[in-house]
Image (cartoon, helix red, strand yellow):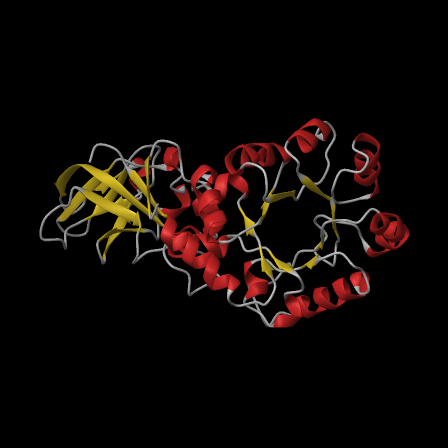
Length: 345
């Protein structure tokens, strides 16, 4: 293997969407922002459409334009950032549905694109995007008269099902939306895994589709294998990598692999991270550098041609835990130097 290989299992992706869909009695959409969470929207989105998704969400209008080219006419594509200045042509030409976040966006939308579909995003307590209760109360009748495609909000603590913020936001969202005719949406992956009172009319799973927490039942989607360039014996007292941060206490067989932070392997992973030889963990030694990582392979019978950062025995969340981050960052950081292969076509 001359180049690190990232393999994306589209069958697993579809299975994860179907499994999350089966947990509710409402419509299940799919979030494919950030180039399908780093795995390639050009393959991820059609696979999810094949599984049954008919409504997709992206972060920016530019992502929506790309996704429309991929999916063609038919599926609804909603834009979380709403109608930003300069977006009118893209929204119109790609038939996007901006999720309007405040009165300025509403005015911009109806003036630039009268009659064009839109949705509404409400702030139920996260204080990130959406109309606050007072703003929504002032705009509600006008907005609803235009028949929004969706009214949504977003949970701040859904990865902790017992967190009191979840019920607080659900109740606030109900107070803001009860009695409206438009479909309502509150839950991403974490909310799907909670009880039916969080599901409303549409759910919007993202990270769970790609094998990440909190959907612990998810099938493994991404496998990353990195070639071994060289191996050597390191004697007690010798060091590995920049800064002499790791010193051998015993004779150690060290494999140098062809990957680093230029490939999206987080530098912070070095002190606690592992690569995998099949089911066997192999400790990262010293710092993750731009293109190279030292790995302890002393306990292996032979030095393999490649080691895995992601495989069925070490998912995105295990890698994230070692770096003190979350699986989202691991996936969306995956670099452009990998040879990408898609299975389950």
